[in-house]
Length: 155
Image (cartoon, rainbow, N blue to C red; front, side, top):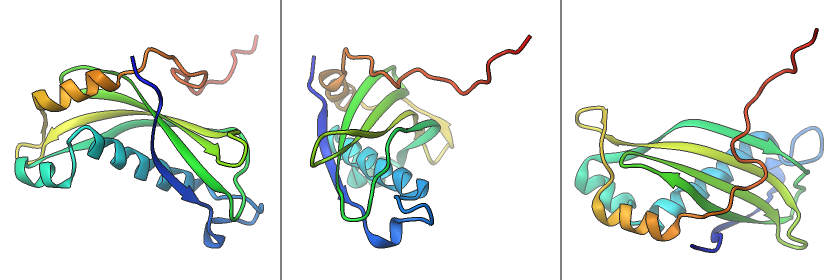
């Protein structure tokens, strides 16, 4: 069992603010991407590992929930949870919080795939990374995890 990891933080810059006066959706993705990279570093799948092994991790599915607005100058904290994994895949979950009051601003759930870039095929995570992942895996199922996009059926 593990606590949520805080491996990344950011501040909303003026160029990230859109015509609605809050952070544009592209920058939520950017910040979540940086948090994902920080998680890879945390479990030993960093840049040096990727170069040495010719492997990488690809995002194969992503869902973002925009819950509240982030504004210029606000400091943001990202809490990261590993919701599960198998030999080749992992599900990461990031919560974006406003640092000043811990309000939940956004959440993303990501399906990641370990890839051998020489063969362009999925490949197993190395044993040491799997061990680190096991130590990080969270028993919590966050409120915005496991959702799907759908319209209600109208009769």
